[in-house]
Length: 350
Ligand code: ATP
Ligand code: MG
Ligand code: MG
Image (tube, rainbow, N blue to C red; front, side):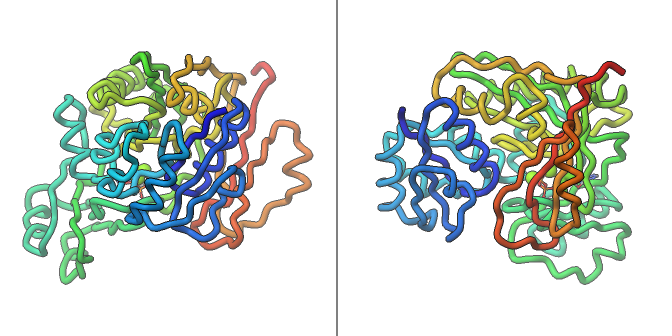
């Protein structure tokens, strides 16, 4: 088979590579970190800085197609990919890696987002608090994940004397939601879009804790409008591959939280819980193959993340045939670090 290049070396790359291997492809990871849990399951690993254009060019020469497993890959060095095809394209990366671009892009397409304002100086923040008010969340425009790079501002006083980090920020008003959910779609080479069922997501300390299906009625009634918007985003970007939009279900309909131009933690349940996983369909899409069936493979599905060094009774967990365990092979458990996940399938009639 041909070689697929993966930019980024974390668990999403690892699960993409495992799906690619099933289809007979070999994968080559490009990542800056020394120990890549994606590279461990791949045929080749280029460990280099994003800006090392010689390393990037040599990597690209080995690959028929290049994809990415996280959105913070800097765009400029990707010029060194030369003629290698990048899917999803660089435009998708550019939009999704900057919260301000992302919000403007979504609103231009008619989507709702939290009220927001760009914040570069303490004066901007003061103005944002007058315009939008508290509570709200100050977020770095770039590089945030798992709730990192965010400051919750519960009252105007919280903003007094706050030490702004030396990078562009965005302040957004706090959204009062009844639930959170995600729309995960895959757009093929031919522009055809398939959706997985939307999971209801519960976050703890800014980190995804659980995704469950079926979602509550409050979510299900908002899924059609959310899907319509997500498909618009995919078409507008000429997107190929898996795209995720995170939503708040509110009294005024679905409000976009953020988008991820990639496979998503809230879609890990699709490995056992859907007829074709998000990882397999992403590989199929970027390789120009027909997309697989996204329907549910169980009556109920619950995915929970294993975070940090939380104590688990592994024997008990694995003794229950409903459970499917995934461990990412990370060497050290740090607080807030995603170490694995468990997907629980409910197959029996209610
Ligand atoms: P991810 O790992 O999903 O990329 P992230 O670091 O980009 O996370 P966000 O998705 O922006 O973080 O926020 C994490 C969680 O914090 C959200 O899922 C939601 O629970 C809460 N949150 C973020 N922004 C808002 C908001 N404006 N109003 C209410 N809750 C919010
Ligand atoms: Mg994010
Ligand atoms: Mg998020």
